[in-house]
Amino acid sequence: MKYTKEISNKLNELLEKNYDAEAGYIAAKENVKNSNLKNFFKERATDRYDFGHELKDEIKSYGEEPDKGTSWKGEAHRAWMNLKSTFSSNSDDAILQEAIRGEKAALEDYNKIIQNADLTPSTKKVLEKQRDSVQSALDMVKTVEDFI
Image 1 (cartoon, rainbow, N blue to C red):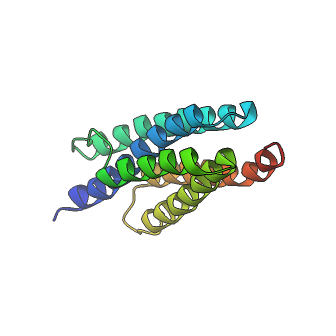
Image 2: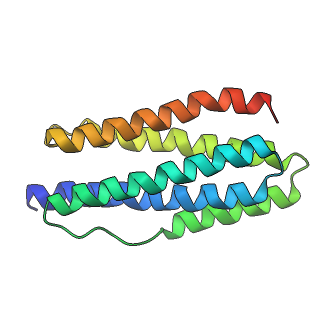
């Protein structure tokens, strides 16, 4: 496998996970009642949308085509969040906890890719910026949790 193909495959996996996260945050926003939480999820969905465009640009810079859609795993996770919110007595908290779990997994994904020594400086910079944004969102969750 060529270097550019290998890296673009990893970036496409991350892109798909960002599609999943964006769709998940949109679904979460629609399933919570708390306005602070709605705003939090809306901001996260916007971030993931922006991340997707940045990743697409990086993939294209390797001469490859970006993937175009969510994964079945992401669809299953959103269905689980919807089911959980339907049957949970504190659905806002349950949905927030699922979002936290997803963001922790995203941090792991970003860190795995960033540790790849073959990244170009521009790709590494984009991924580090996105990873740091995910970390900031996790840090902000502590504040949001106080309001629900």
